Length: 220
View (tube, rainbow, N blue to C red):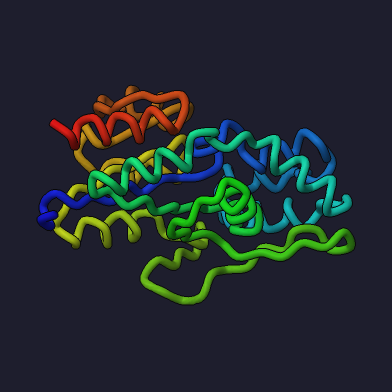
């Protein structure tokens, strides 16, 4: 397979590969832990990373209960065959997330999926909650998000092959604008924002739609 035929799909995780965000489910289950942290983030008083760090550290529950919440994020049920099909036509899948690898890797492992994940590391205990840390210093480091999704996409573009992006939230706008509209997949807030600013994109509801589109068009 030639370099030009190779591709990298950079994908957000929460709300993109899964139906629901871990953050939203946590705030619904433990409404007192969010306090005003998210409002402070939206007001520009603290970073996105700091808001999530403070909120996740407030979780007080057992590990089995937290696993149940993680499972209720509803990861794409077809992710394993989708990743396999993408690889067969030259696409690698890379997760770029401002969330935490503690739950991301558990969901992927449960599906038997092994893909590259750029996310903030974390560790959970019932006494201290989910403690999220910055990732190790790298070209993908972001003081604002922990993981610089723009840098992940730009690194993929350097390969000279095709690059696609899929996302749903505010941190996904800048990286989405780096790829061609026909390889820009969006839902929820991201879709609304792209429409608002007059940028074309391909809407999706389930992540499998992104994979099927790329596989189908790679076969043409």
